[in-house]
Image (cartoon, rainbow, N blue to C red; front, top):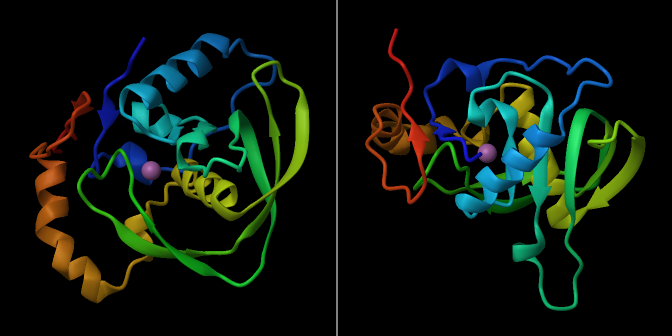
Length: 183
Ligand code: CO
């Protein structure tokens, strides 16, 4: 099943997501999240972006890799970042929930993370470079943080109108979206 992607302005994107009960069958959800991500040509997708405030995200960054590099394809369930390290580096990020906006974000290049896979096996792994960045971006989603939260107030003013349009559903996206409910 392919879910519509929740757009900027929906309160679910600003909420800290809850742990998934250990052992719950999440295989179908993981498969659906990968399908949803691929349908939108994304390299990462977190559950709040399909309207679910639970701690899971999927990553497949292989499309971002050069020929000689290996990408990662993984589901991260109830993850916890244990360590972030290194000199922060800037990279232009985008987000399926914020179509049409890309901005430089500084992040540390190294991350150590504990998580469960869809079989509920526990892993502690280290990632660097682009892999770390995608993981940090998706992890932020389950913490209720968006990449636009990091940009300067000056830049934020420049994109204010665009963000307002996104929250009203005025977007140019080639995937299904869910327009935030105004309350
Ligand atoms: Co995102």
